[in-house]
Image 1 (cartoon, one colour):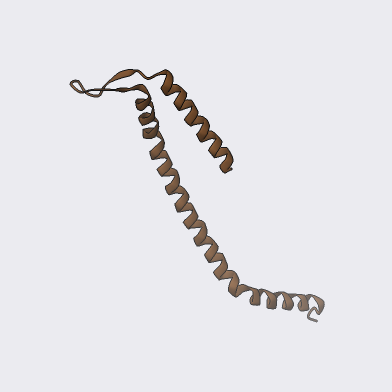
Image 2 (cartoon, helix red, strand yellow):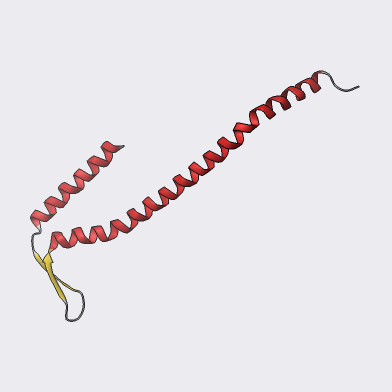
Length: 105
């Protein structure tokens, strides 16, 4: 899985490099009426990409962390309940088996 992720990031980097080389132009971005930002097009593309990526990445990491904590809590609960149950289950099963072999008269 890491190999695929690495390949995707390398391809994305190469595509960005090729885009940057072919589009190294000045662009003007009108932020407000009197405020104009003059920058290179590749910088604008990278910043726009990061503005879209970072919040979703942080949301994903937060949800994954929360779910991992929930899974760990459930696993601990199962471990705690199964630690006390095997002796009870074994006795119950033996009693049930004996009752089936020797039905009451």
